[in-house]
Image (cartoon, rainbow, N blue to C red):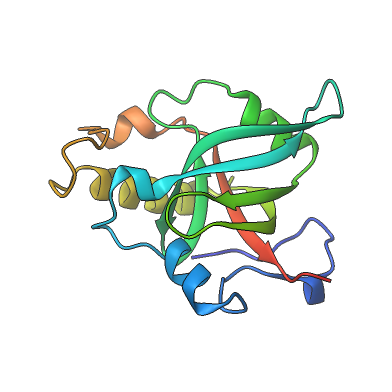
Length: 158
């Protein structure tokens, strides 16, 4: 389901999977549908599109189709996070609950309608699981249809 990166990045410097990461970090990212809300909360550091200064933002990440995503959530409202990543897709993915790690990453907007539908359906189904009473519970896929969705690739450290 994951499509190739067409942004012109150096493919030898990136890896869309997390297979090159140390096992404990990879396991923290490759969470299962049974993962609780707290395990999905990360920080990202991205450049502010207006200021050009580094900006740290708390956000949820999701796993679907064996890939990591950032999503604006139900309703699809515009977010600074999404706008910043569109302007400068390279950022730092900070694991902060349990395992702590700062990982170089790149965000690619998901624009293919079929991929968007499949990924959002997986996210909604996952969040509707009764595993964590604190989890946001969207009841309809339509609520998430306009969400801003970014595919994350973890870059090798150089």
